[in-house]
Length: 421
Ligand code: BGC
Image 1 (cartoon, helix red, strand yellow):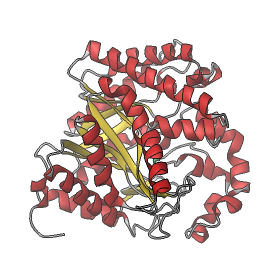
Image 2 (cartoon, protein in one colour):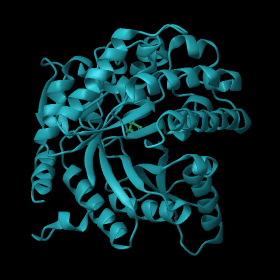
Image 3 (cartoon, rainbow, N blue to C red):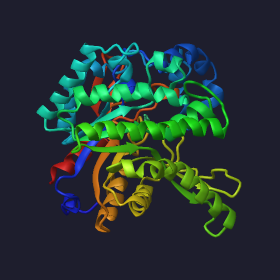
Image 4 (cartoon, protein in one colour):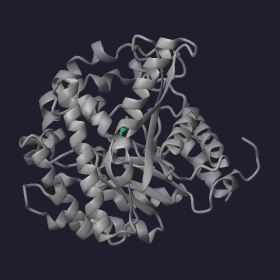
């Protein structure tokens, strides 16, 4: 990159930050995922070779991948207790925004019973961010639900949305006094695909498109109601949503079948949810990890390089196309609410961030109202069905050595880059 002050290409009040999610970092929580982990850890360890040995990183990860402990969120990275230290690290990285989730299962461990200690915790948490002049992006739901809610059928039942509404009401009363940005739901599309079509995440169902679509639609309703509840109390809060979005492309640009399949999948994956909530969102949140090339038979045929530790093909510049399309569709302010990569050796992270920056500069130069970039993730964390071995953190965490935090070189570079402004 040139030596010019590239930060000048971004609005002065642009948010530069990082994202996390409660269950992936906090530790010692108890929700539907916790139960699932206990039930599935052994089997995941036993089948790791069969599922993962194709990965270029296999030799490095196999000890962890074949260990049942890898599949338990357990102590997390003890962020619940070490948040002050972690926020100091955010400051050290010259970041000014942070996305986190308030864990429903902590706040309402039993139906209708509010845990004041947990509420108090998040109050202090938000204060600790404000004290450091870090803008909190409060995320309400990142897939985990209390066990009692899961037992009632979770979001499968329309009549259960009222429980989510009560939770939203509670946190809007208690936790939003000093909040300007709220994300209602994280990636309903991933949740529904993995939980209800592929059956790889709780509740582990392989249903059909109609049933899965029903859960997806219930999440549309949950979002709309949450939006109304929050706005009725605090009209000035910006409320948005953060689906998973991919840069979906035809493998062969001139092949009509590849093009048709691409358009259908783009619509279903990227825009279906947004289209249903576009009147109840103040901003568009984009989570970006994937660029996928589709053939007319619906198969993904991606280039074989470069890939990250999870074997995911990487095209960080594709972020531009997602931003441009989201802007064309909705003309609302855009935040990158997540983007990042599993890269234990930190080989590609700096390149990924640099390409993201170029993509964002390009979008901004076209007059797109892009307002923030939240990298996934601040810290290494529990990567759901894969467990602990994928390392997404700007900051490495050594769980075997008292959860020691170490800033990765790419993050040091990013922090320096941010300092120029
Ligand atoms: C999720 C995160 C996850 C990340 C990396 C996103 O889809 O919101 O929870 O860790 O991707 O897979």
